[in-house]
Image (cartoon, rainbow, N blue to C red; front, side, top):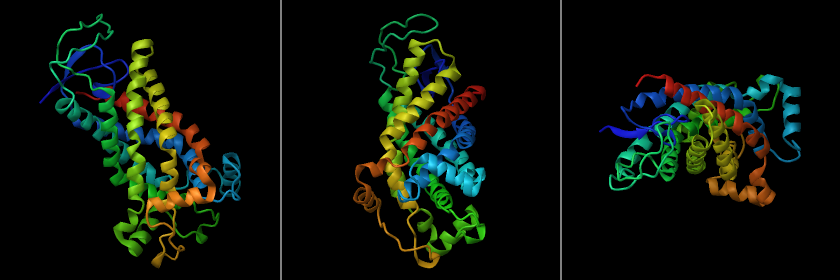
Length: 337
């Protein structure tokens, strides 16, 4: 079943606000291909910020007083390469993760539009376009509403968690290895870390923290809902080019996401860096469930504990995700129908 959607200057297909009506034959592959480029852009810009964030989230206050001290100590003791420690899993992982997330996001948006939000009896509101205002007359509703974008975001977040959980688990364990001498580290690299965890705890160990990952990505509701709202506003109220709209909407919506989701990310990181115990000999496990990690953060640091490391995360959110969305939307526009 083909679906009629709007294409705006700031988005492609059902990604954002609608303007002139066009019949578009949707190709599932486009979202998945464009997501690969999004993942590469996100990693290149954002990984150093992520390393500082994870280290602040998983250490005692006595080790780092703040993000600047964490940055300086990391560079002083491990060099600039220390900021990219654990980058290999997300380099490969984010290519697949963003491909799966943005590809499935495009797919879920279309499914929701075709099956839940397409009502031929609803009048479409007047929408400014390059062809002039569209009449307020009954016609097929071919714009996915903001709530549809938000729901699709949650569904895409849960889908990508199946890949994200082990990738982020390995990344987090590599990021908290502080010894400059590699021979003193428990894990030599991502492959060694993966092998040791599977050998000691099986696939279940590799997916340690999956429930916390699902909780964290439920907040994609706010990311993709706000992305749609901001894109609509910029398209209707400004004369910005499509890449500029993607840049500002991608960056600002990512900051909305982190403002709502950050406490759950702290809990997720605590789960993923908790010793697994057993044959790994990495210590004694503290948290059986994400709720135990959440309680421990509150017991130790109170409500402020849920925001430790927020500054580097917030600084990272805009440039990393803005560039990722520019890359994604640009590739979506460039690929043939």
